[in-house]
Amino acid sequence: MIRQKSITFDPATYLSGAGSGRKIVQLKAKGIFFSQGSSADCIFYLQKGRAKITVVSIAGKEATITLLSPGEFIGEESIALGVGQRLATATAITACTALKIEKSEIVRVIHEEHRFSDLFVAFLLARGLRTQADLVDQLFNSSEKRLARILLLMAEFDRPGKEETMIPAITQETLAEMIGTTRSRVSYFMNRFRKLGFIEYNGRIRVRKSLLNVILYDQPFEQNAVSAPLLGLAGTALGVEKRTVAFESELTAYSNC
Image 1: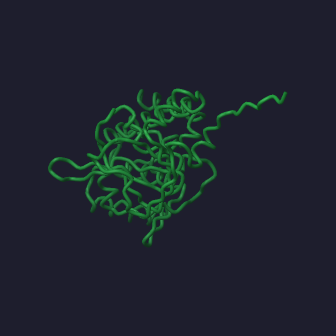
Image 2 (image 1 turned 120 degrees about the horizontal axis):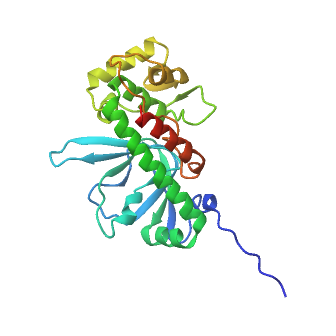
Image 3 (image 1 turned 30 degrees about the vertical axis):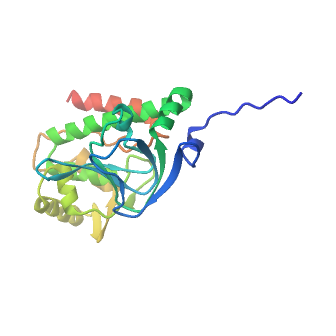
């Protein structure tokens, strides 16, 4: 009698290809994953490219609330919304490849596969910690430091081994929305960073690791500014477990400053 070989569930394999209740989708730059007010019937796992989450107020004012990198889920709040509507819009900044997972399938795999549910819960915790760090950054840091932090996050300097990197195309208006200041102020800081050798830009922005000095050692316009932690904020779902504990400790330390 041939003994049937047990199959071990692998989250990385599951998130890399199509299958029951899930399919690969490709979007061009400025393509829409979902729109604010649309039905919350699925989530996405970003495999390649960059995306952003935006909200529009009743008065019609749009704000960018977060940027997304490969390895992150998009629209995960739909699991808690029942048959509700999307609270925000997800848009591709660059050409994107993503895995679209139907709500019934993501609920099934969370309940049945503990390795996936562990990964998903770790991702949600990291996303919550990032939201808290964003709030600390907004409340206590100068706009110059907030801009430096956003650029470093987009360049993924929370991951080891990078000295400089080119970030996706982004307008100064979008950067101004994200840090809560004016476009002219962003332009002033960008020129200052360029003169100091922290960045280069000619259409696209190249960020150097030395920009970390603005967050870690600066004495800028607001002497009492407090640095929100950078490390761990752009963690992917598959790599976030190892950084969550260290990141939480950093956040606690900064909160006690």
